[in-house]
Structure formats: structure tokens, C-alpha cells
Length: 225
Image (cartoon, rainbow, N blue to C red; front, side, top):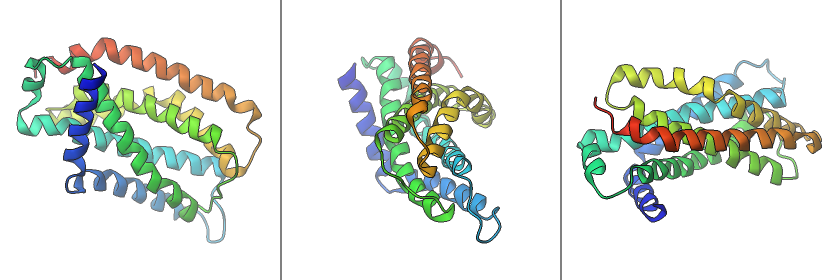
């Protein structure tokens, strides 16, 4: 299953990055959100660290919606979804491959969002990267696990695609709370000793969402339009 998943992920990454257009849309959307929020502060006044972390994660979440619409659109546009279902590849490998590809694309987008947040929102990066990096990976994995599941549900019909964010964002609230809390502490150089519980919360929801996606994805991806 792992080898099949990596094959799906490599295929998707090659197609998305072939012309650079696939990643340009989510990156530009995230940058636009960060810039718009930066204009809400009075001149010379800094955005609070926790608010800046919230803006960073908001940009990340909206970007991942576009990322998974693009990833699943690759098969929908070419009529290859049924071919994947009929192939000897495990349907769980399709989900994991999409999740891995989405995870890497989201990380690439965040490599742009982080310096943009520092510049436009007036934040500083402080020492101690272990906790923020672990939080980034934990929250990102939960985000892409749900994105890979619900992206399959939303594909094929415009009405479903418009409902994707309405279904996805409420489920992400616990993960986003962990990301915003730890990210705000990182931007403000606050002590991180009491934040391990938030990281544990994110890891717990990662496990919950991963288990739910493994169970539900075969039914979601293989259902009739």
C-alpha cells in the first residue's frame, strides 16, 4: 500500500507542478488573505502575535481547499477516477497518496506564508523551533487527512465543491486552536512549557481523523455521482 501511495503522490505532484499553475492559485490566495488582514491595523501598530498565527492558519486552510480541489480534479477532468477504482491499486492507497501530495504542497505554500506573515504582520521569529515545527506537522497532517477525505466527496458537482469549506472548517477547529495557540506563543517568545497539551490534542485529533478517513474513504470515493 505504501509503494502504491507514493506512486499516486508522485504522479499528482508531477502534474500539479508541471507548469507551476496548480500551486500558484493557493499560494496567491493565502498571500492575498495575509495582505488584506495586514491593512486592518493602524499605521505603526503591530498585529498581536496570536492574531498573526490565526491569519497564517486561515491562509493555510483556504489554500488547502484549492489544493485538494486541484488534486482530485486531475482525475475528474480526464475521466480517470473510474480507472483508478478498477485498477489493482488499493483505494486506501489513493487516499494516502492524495494526503501525502497535499501535505507536501501545503508545506510548500506555508514556506511562502511564514515570511509573508513576518513582513506584513510585523512578527518576529524566535529561537526554539522544535515545538512550532512539531505543531506545524501535526496540524498540517490533520488538515490534509480531512482534505483528502472531503475533497473526494466534493468533486464532480459545483454544489458539493461550494459546501466543502462549510463541512471542513468546523471539523478543523480543535487543530486550529492548537496551531494558533502555539504559533502565537512562538511569535511572541512566550514560554512554551505549558503548551505540550495542545500538541497532544493535535496528535489525538490526527489519529481520530486518520482512522475515520481510512474507514470512510472507500465509500466516499467509490460512490455514484
